[in-house]
Structures are given as C-alpha cells and as structure tokens.
Length: 282
Image 1: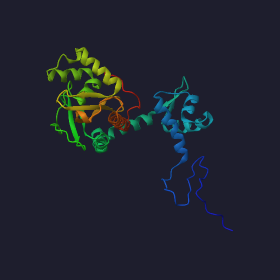
Image 2: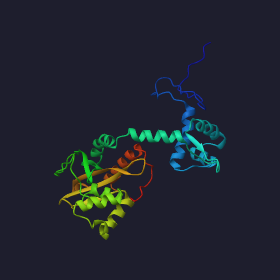
Image 3: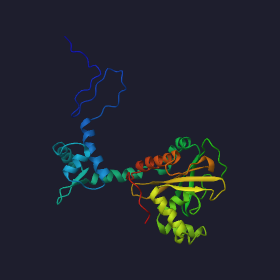
Image 4: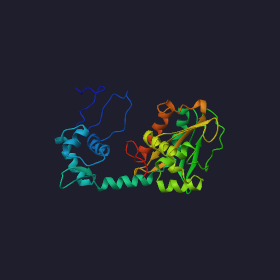
C-alpha cells in the first residue's frame, strides 16, 4: 500500500530539508535550513557591532555553544568569521568586510529614496522631499507631491538653507562641522554655529533625530526632516515633510514624525547603517 501523502505537515528541518504542504498554502522559495540557522550568528555579530566570545555569541543567536561552534568553523574557513587568537572571540572576517564594501558601492541612496517617497507622502499626508549635500550645501534632488497642496517654490536642484529649513538643519546637525561652517558663511551666516540658540537647536536635533520648523522661512509653512545615514555613519540624505502649518503636527511623537523616522530607519538600514541612534557630527 502506498504511503499517504503529506497533509499540511512540516518535515523536521534540523538541517537541509524543505517544508512540505498540501498545495493550499503559499509556498516560499526553497532554502537551505542550515544556512538560515548559521546566518543567525552573522546577524548577532552585526547587532553587537563587536567581536563576541563563543558563549555570548551563541546566546545572541538563540542557540547553544555546541550547536554554534561547527557553523563558526565553517564560516571561518570561508572568511566570513575570524577568531581572535588571543581572546578567542569571534568577529566578522575578511570576506564579510569585502561583501559589505561591495554592497555599499552598489547602493544608490537617491534611487532608494525616490522609491520610498510616494508611500511616505501618502503616510504623512503632505509633500515630501529628499536632499543631498551638494558642492555648496544641501540640494533638493526629488520632490513628491502629497495629497495636500503646499505652495512653495521647491523643485529638483533647489538649495536648502542650513539655518532656516528642516532639511538644512539636518545637515547642519550631522554633516562635518568644517563643511557646515563653510556653507553657512556662503549663506551670510558665518556666526551661526556660535549662536547659543542655534547650537542648542542642533543638539536637540541630534538627540531626537528630527528637525522641526514652524513659520520660519515662509509664514504659514512648517516642515519636519530626518537624516539618512550610510554604512560609515555619514549623513547622505535628508528626508523632509512640508505642509501648511495647521496640517503638520510637529510634536516629536506624532504619527507624521513616526512615519518620517520609520522611513529614515528603513533607508539607513538598506545603506548599511547600524540600527542605533546617530551620534553628533564631528
């Protein structure tokens, strides 16, 4: 007698066996379970941001040291993991570093931001923009119109004031100080960084990861902006929301602020930035 066919059951996938179902459930692409399990060790090292001893690394990956060790041996042979000969701790190896550098070279921050902005405009209910640091300061590279019209002369190539716009203040807070000082001088704001009020505002932006502007450059127009970082911790983009002041909730925990921060985190992670609060510019 033929054995009954599997009925929506999962085979034991301790190593490399696929999941079997009766065809009524969506099938995910077949993978190698042992690779997925071992990959948790690599993820744990990325989260930690430093080398870890075997016991701590295994716990962070949700497995026992005895289970983790064979994976680490194989990863070591590939160069994905390296063991410190003195401390015995495990860190990322040369191949992992090479993969990371190549990945950074292949990612275009502006392209990623342009793809993100349409959904963000709908989420915050207003116009959103992306800006980069250009030859003379912040430059807007893309504008996505939202459901609420805002009458501001803002388009591709428009410069953003470092002192008076949400976008500019993000770069003032997180870009290298020397470059910011030069750009401020070109704007006629050479003394801005020594202004205690502006300096305190920049510290607040670094702490909150959010800039807020109400009726500052244009009466009746408000803005919020967030930074996007790359894998080296450098600010590469500012994402801003702009709207008539009554329609933009500038509180740090508003739904619009949370949507901006979520977009910032998604983009930063795709660019290789660590998932942690950014540090002040040096």
